[in-house]
Every structure is written in structure tokens, then in C-alpha cells.
Image (cartoon, rainbow, N blue to C red; front, side, top):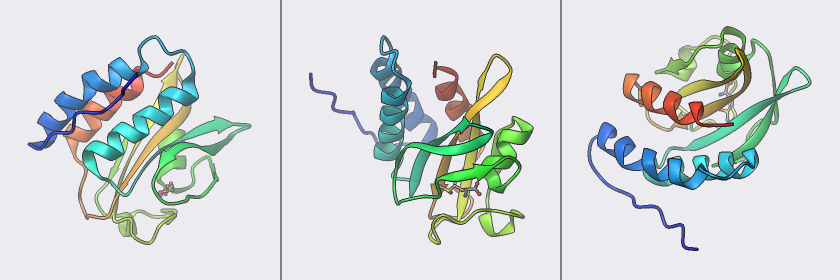
Length: 156
Ligand code: SME
């Protein structure tokens, strides 16, 4: 079955509004979490062209690299460390307009300038995070937070 994504131009909101139903269709009825995380990263990378889009999953009290699209990345992040470990510890989405201004930021790629990290919640606990990095400063805002939080809420 062909699974071509329809990529559109337009405002960020328009891009998300086009992409969300396509992501929903890709993951609906598929119970395998790895398959769904992989397709979500691919769809986001293809539509928005960000530097890095990927998941870290909580395993043995560490964040361990999961499905991603982009350059190779750090494999393990401890709780409270970097943007990802802080999002995990606080169970909140973090929008970082300038990664160099974030104390303890973990630079997996020197090209990353801004970042958003969204926690994956299950039964009140964080089971992982979605991390997105951009080569542009201040590339993420409230629109990204809203739509990315909606996408991760679909993850089983
Ligand atoms: N910058 C992240 C580390 C993960 S990479 O960006 C892929 C952080 O500070 O947690």
C-alpha cells in the first residue's frame, strides 16, 4: 500500500492541520509503538524539514534513544539533564528559543539552535519525550506546542 504523505506549503497552523489527519491515519489500527513512533518522526521531518525529530523512551530510569529522523544523536539522557531530561523531570513541554541560553543543554548536533521537547504521558507518568531540533533560532512557539502535544496524546 502506498503511504505517500501530502506535503503542503502555508502557515505553520495550515501545515499542522494538513498533517495531523495524515498522521492519525498512519497510526490508527497499528498497535506497535515503534512502528508508530517511526512514522510520526518521518511525517514531521518530511513536512517541516527540521534538523532532528525523534523520541527518547524511559527505560531503567534513563531516557534512551528511540525512533528518530536526522543526524546521529546521544543515546542516553539522565533525569533532569538537558532539555529532554528536564521535560521528563517536570512533566511539561519546554520551548527553548535559543539552546545556548538553556543551562545544561546537551548539544547532540552543533547545528541545533532551538528546540521543543514534549513529554509522553501515560497514567500520569512520563514514558518518554518527543524532541525536535531546528537549525533556526526561535523556530518553535505555542502553535508547535499545541499540535505536537495533540500528536503525542495519540501514542499508545
Ligand atoms: N538537546 C537535547 C538532547 C537531545 S538531541 O538534541 C537529539 C537535550 O538537551 O536534552
